[in-house]
Length: 187
Image (cartoon, rainbow, N blue to C red; front, side, top):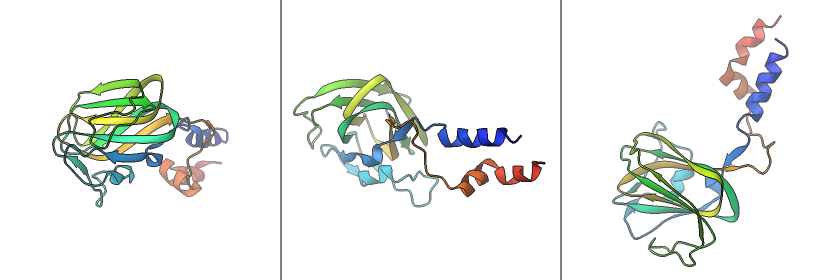
């Protein structure tokens, strides 16, 4: 039993540490050709409809969200939390290039490294879109092909530091995993 607890703790610390969400680090913008309501900044605030103060970002017809980083990253997956109105999506990853403010022209074009379609039209849930292996990009476009309500966007990359550990308090770990009750069972 004394060996099992340290093993569980190690698993909690290191499990899932191989990737991280870089959406908060991105320069995020919405193209202006199509109308929308809300601020793209709410897409990285960690709040979904279950949170009382969650704010949506809504495309009225269709639109493109653009995410860009200073350096290329190896992309693993994109997660979006879709509200009551969902649609079909395209995710386009690029090395170099830039989509203009209207969303009608890439100047310069850059090299497209992935084009993924998601046609589930799911609502009120997380949708995960996986990139092909070794997809590298420094900018990304999330196209919604019709009206959509978004709450969150997360973009996961392979972490260059496999020992990166999410900051959690020991009390939170114990409470979430029930370690407080296990302590009383150890002889």
